[in-house]
Image (cartoon, rainbow, N blue to C red; front, top):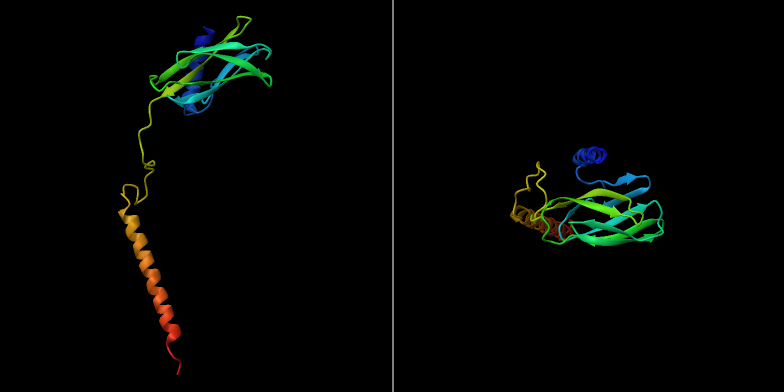
Length: 162
């Protein structure tokens, strides 16, 4: 029951935070977290955990990346894991199992492939839907105007004063 409440609270917090804040699960000094907590398939996540002490290795398992060993580094258990490119976009449970058999879980959200090659259309800009021809035309006009001003300035210097 307690883990169901924790999962529900985690999902609500994730929705509010825009899927950007790590969602660690803590229980008496035993926790696991992944950073980033939302990732595109094919990329790597950092895993940080604790079993109450950082003296012994522990195991972290998820359907997202398999099983990895977290090792003691500066008071935490640390590892990295790569989410394979073929993973289906969804939430995956990440479970820490300590040598003492204590466990902790969190959720790793895998998102689909980003296919857009253009910047975001944020609206309000008259060039937002342009293919570049307007910018090229404006640049050519600016160069032409600059050349005309330079010619005019040169002619003024060469006119004899009477």
